[in-house]
Amino acid sequence: MSTPSACWSLSPTQILDQLVRTLALQFQVPISLVSIIDERRQWFRARIGLAAEHTARDQSFCAYAILEKGVFQVPDTHLDPRFADNPLVTGEPGIRFYAAAPLITEDGLGLGGLCIIDTVPRPALTVEQAAVLEHFAQLAMLRLSTLRSASYLDAPTGLFNRFRLEQDIDHALTFGGHSLVVIDLVTPDFLNDLVRALGYNFSQELVSVLHNALREQLPDGQALYKITPTRFGFLVASGKQVAERAFKQLLSAFEAPLACGNIPIQTQPGIGAIALELDSSDTDRDWLRLAVSAADDARDRGTGWCWYEPHLDLAQQRAFLLLTSLAEAVRSEDQFHLVYQPRLEVTGGQVTTVEALLRWQHPVLGPVSPGEFVPLAEKTALMRPLSLWVLKHVVEQAARWQRQGLRFRVAINVSAPDLASPLFTDRLMELVAQHALDPQALEVEFTESALSQNLDMVCDQLLRLRALGMEVSIDDFGSGYSNWTYLSQLPATTLKLDRSLIKNITEQEKDYRLVEAMIELARRVGYRTVAEGIETLQQYQLVSALGCQQVQGYLIARPMPAGALESWMTTQRRQLANQLREAEPVQSLH
Ligand code: C2E
Ligand code: MG
Ligand code: MG
Image (tube, rainbow, N blue to C red; front, side, top):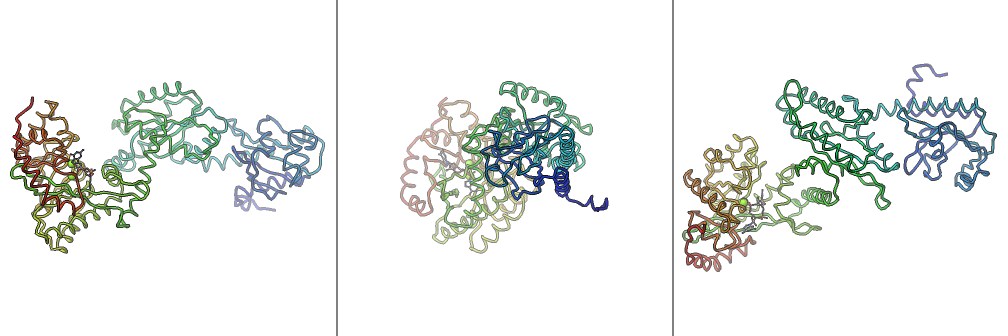
């Protein structure tokens, strides 16, 4: 006999095993099972008298049992056309008699059945026997529920967790007509910032405020699942239009700030939804990931909600592929190379600087633009090895040109994380010393995104570079929310006006006036100005008349490998400079 403590030490499945053993004894049958059904199989959570752990769902007797309210019985399978040809009847274990009580959850969901099976026909169960079987099924269900609630609940919130959601998605797929909805209430970055600013307890409280507020907006009885601390999910059975009305209501409910510990918190909801439809061609779709990508997209596009669209997922898959192959690419040495684009002095036509630009030849995807992979890498730790790769190759090339007596600077693009710590500058100094390179032969270009980092640290790093005699330029100025106040504070020497500003200056008077004002302001603050993206002679004539000192763009030259640049310098550059000198500066066209 087991002592009570020995009983408590039984594993959950041992308890169910004891139960089927007792049942087999009670009914004098060779086989008894606790069977759970999913859309493809039936699984035996406990079994006696059967070796298999699962069978295909279409052979399952229990699939019939869960449709019944009471006990389901087949006294002789050979006489029942539904089962006479079933492989479990014609082959092993040779089922002749079958009876099962359904296992039903509190919310009415049929999970499977508790069954007794014989290999010879038997009379139907009496009412009393059927009641005993049902009683045992209730016991088994109690055991299964405690197991389910322990492993399917998120302890701090009491909400269902992601495992449970994945299971329920499977069930919803079998029933059809459901959609999965994912709602992000704030971004993980926002929550992390709050943890840093106000502490962990506050952020915990916010998570609870968020899910309470969401629960209030959902109909009573709607199951809510916590996917991450800021992301929740639920399943809806309504059509698309009804669901969309509900999304709009949800969004308007979250327009007002939520109070958390007397601090108003503005949520930024993103709702993503996907219709759950079984498609024989791909049964193993990652529904949750697809709904999450739709929610991210809803927020990025500022639409608030959106349905999953396959092309957006393709973009995400491509981003994933790029990021997973980046580390290998940095190691491989033959996937990356640098090209150089000259900048021309308006007065004199000299080339004082060439900009190093990274190129990636991906083994499967072919050429990938840095405009695509650099912003992705910047979000991960992969940017560091990539920046160091560029730095090493730029310094080596600049040292080679220095040895050849070529006198121009090489500008290197640095990304925000490079300036967020002293490591990049340290490495740059090491490499410069190692290659005996005059640091004045280098220039660093950074964009305003670097200023979102610790500003003091960024300034410290820039000052160290300036102290070595390097030029420092602000790249893509005017492309985003350019902040004029930084201009007087930053230890920079050059302002590069973004291509988007230059693009329309010949047609749009406003753009022209803006460029005029920027060049004037930069001059007053003491910056040299460079116009990027000069593609036509007219653009060149306009910016040179406005006093812009340097120009860069396809009109001058496209980015090219080091060797091609050397020959360009000796041949085309002079010819181009002469052509440009002949082109009169043009005062305003407007
Ligand atoms: P950026 O630093 O502003 O570089 C200028 C970009 O404009 C380059 O694109 C260049 O090829 C392109 N360009 C130059 N002249 C013209 C023109 O006349 N018309 C047009 N339409 N485009 C022109 P690219 O090489 O694709 O680089 C894109 C961006 O990727 C760069 O913008 C820079 O932010 C980043 N990047 C490139 N190489 C590196 C690198 O080594 N490290 C880092 N951190 N970023 C890099
Ligand atoms: Mg640049
Ligand atoms: Mg630029």
